[in-house]
Image (tube, rainbow, N blue to C red; front, side, top):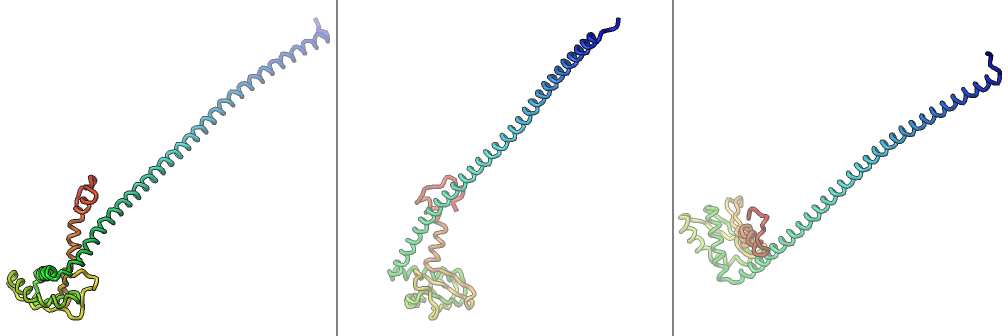
Length: 226
């Protein structure tokens, strides 16, 4: 039987409603899928950025920690250097006090004469030269000339050699020198310094570790004492 126009219109509307419903369901499905993919991608991006931020702050934290260690090490080294400087200043003060006492020692003519003789004989035994020029303080020229015979005699007794001694009348040890003698041979090419300061410096090099121990106690971190 032929369908009436009303029936055709009714079927067409039914088909259109069905198609529209299918389209709406498909659109909702697409929207849901898109929302799910969006959330997944957003979560991935957020997680990726969160990891990057965490890594950034971890690096910053390590840098800050390293900077703190460097700063602490620098401050510790500076403190150690200050302690060492103070200790060296104390040692230097001890040696300076010894030098002051040496300058007073030469005022005792009898004792200083014996020391000057011993220093001169020691220098001669180091040189072992036949002709030697002696340089002393200007104030010690007379004293030195007086001891020359005994110096020559003692040197001869020890070395079995003769020596011609002469006191320098033009050049002298500095006024501030504590005393002692400088010996020259081979026209000044060979020199032995046996001043009281030179002897003190030599002794100080050997005694500085003992001086440090006496002032500050033994350093447990030091393996060697020289």
